[in-house]
Amino acid sequence: IMGDINVDILKTDTNTAKLNETLANFDIERLSIPPTRVTNTTSTSIDCVCANHYTKDLDVEVIHTGISDHKAQICNLKISLPNSTQPGQIIRHFREENIYHLKYLLAENNWLKVHNAINVDQAYENFSKSLTATIEMACPKKKRRPRKKKILDMYDNKDALLLKQAYLQALSKFELTGDIEDKAICTDAKKRYDLKLKSLRKQATVEYIEKSVNKPKAMWDTINKERKKQGQREPQIQLKVDGKLLDEPLEVAEQLNNYFIKAADEALKKSDVTRTARANPITFTCDKYLSELSFTNSEELSKIIQTFKPKWPAGLDEVPSQLVKICFKELVTPLTRIINRSFQEGQFPSALKCAKVYPKYKKGSATDLTNYRPISLVSTFSKVIEKVIEKVVLARLMDHLEANSLLTEKQHGFCKGE
Image (cartoon, rainbow, N blue to C red; front, side, top):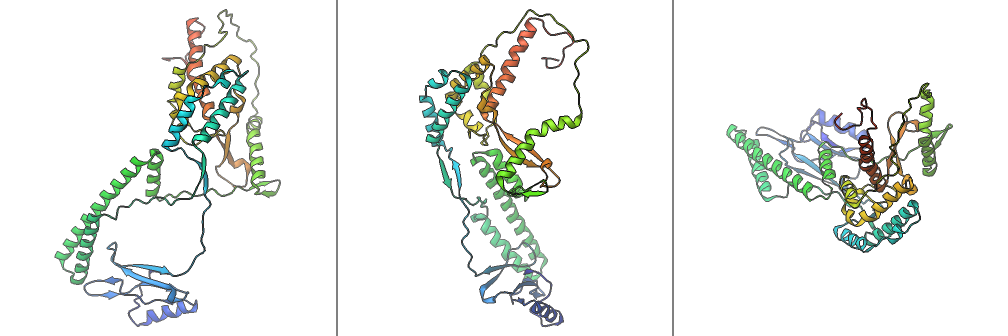
C-alpha cells in the first residue's frame, strides 16, 4: 500500500500509534522512509509504504521529481515471477523488398489461364489461384513474436537533463531558504524545463508519424494515447439460445451466421409492408435498345483502382486494397478481362459473393443474438467490379438514355446538373 496518508512516521505521537495498531490487525507493517515533504521550516515523512510481505523483499527509494511538493517513492519487489510468454502471430510480410519481388513475379505472368477460361467463374478462379501462389512466394507468412510498443523517448536529451538538474537544484535551495528570490528562480527554471519537454514531445510525435508506414493509424494511436484510451481485447462471445448458454466458437459462429442471414427477411415481415401492382401501369414504346454494354479498358480500370483508400484489412482472399493499388499495373490486364467477361455473360464471379463477417456488439445484453450487427469485409476485387458498374456502366447507360431522348423531362434524380 502506497500513498499520502498525512501521518508523519518520524513523530512518535497518538496518530502514528493508532495507524500502526490498525495496520497490525491486518498483518501489515509500515516501512520507515526518509522525509518526503521538506520546506525551510519542516521536514516530514507523511507518505506511506506498507506491506504484509517480508520487508527484506522490498526496496524503497525516495526521489526528488519536482512534480509536486512531495518527493516520490519507488518500491521494488524482489520476487520471482513465472515467465509469461505471449503466443506469436502468423502474419504475412509486405515489406518493400517483398513487394518489389511480388511486382516482378506478377509482371512475368502472362495470365493465359485467365484469358482462355471457358467462363467468368473459371477466369476468376484461375486468377485468384495464380495471384495467391505468387503472393505466397514473394510475401510468405511468418511467425512474429509480440513486440512491445515503442515509447516516445523525449527525456533522454542532454539539454533537457541539464534543465531538469538546474530546476531540482533551484527547488532544493528554495525548500531550504524559503526566500522569495529563490522561489522566482525556481519558477523560471521549471518553466524553461517544461517548455523544453513540450518541444521534445512535439518533435518526437511528428517524427513518429512521419516515419510510420500507416500514417493515419499512427496519428490515431497518438490521439488515443493522449486521451488515455487503451485498446481493449474483445471478450469471447457467449450467446443464450433456447435457455442454453453457448460459448463454443463454432456453435456461436453458426448461430450468428444463421441470424444474420434471416435478419433481413424477419425485418420485412415485422414491418408488414405489402407491395401491390399499379392498377394502371404506365406503358412506353421504345425501339432504342441497349443490347450490350461496351467493355471497359485498362485505362478506366487503373483510374478506378487508384481511387481506393490504401488499407491493409482484407477479405477471404487476404488481398488488401493497399496491395492492389501498389500492383495495379501488373493486375489491370487480367482484371479487365475478368470484368469484361462478367459483362458479357451477365454473371458476377461466384467466389466474390462470399465475405468475411464480424459480429459487432451494439447495446443491451451481450448474450442476445439481436444485439449484434454484421460487419463485412468483402474482397477488394469485388469492390473493384462494383466501382466499375457504378462509374462506367451507369455512365454508359445514362449516355444511351440521353442520346436517344428516353428520359422524361420530369426526371430530375440521378441526372447531371439536377
